Image 1 (cartoon, helix red, strand yellow):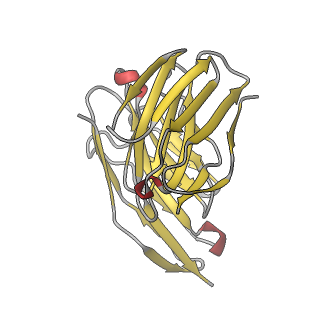
Image 2: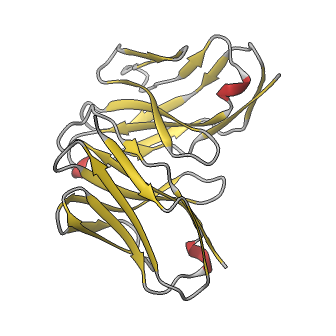
Length: 114
Length: 113
């Protein structure tokens, strides 16, 4: 069966420090991968999506970047965190080309920038 | 473009009350429709889905019917429990655009004993 792993679960980082969040998917190949951010009490904001290795599309210009070094690995990074980067970060995947499949989310990373 | 509109919350109910959370959408083509649930501090979980007009998705006592004529996918449950307290997201997925899902803003449900 397919599973998605996201870590760490919680992170407290000082302003100006780097960031690396990792997401991996098991049990499938060539998934579409997504990074979302959710501010407290708010909806979902799509940050990046990827349809294949090395293929990254950015939805919102910001202080963050994403990479997909392997088929089932999706990494969210920042060189210097801002206070406004605080939030709940969610990784998700779906089957490429399957509109009806739905999206499977990781358990999320709570990032607090202090 | 595609869009999803769902009722603003919070929705506050007593245990065993009837629940309706409204969701309407705009989309080109024939989207699939979904309801997701998010419990505090967790990621989103797929609650139910419907992939074509007049389909009814159901799970854990929740139901929603894909109404193409009214472009709606309202979530209902006959008798809510305290454990149903969560945020509910309506979403759609359509072909093209790298299958980026469109989510509503979420509706918070609070169920009191």
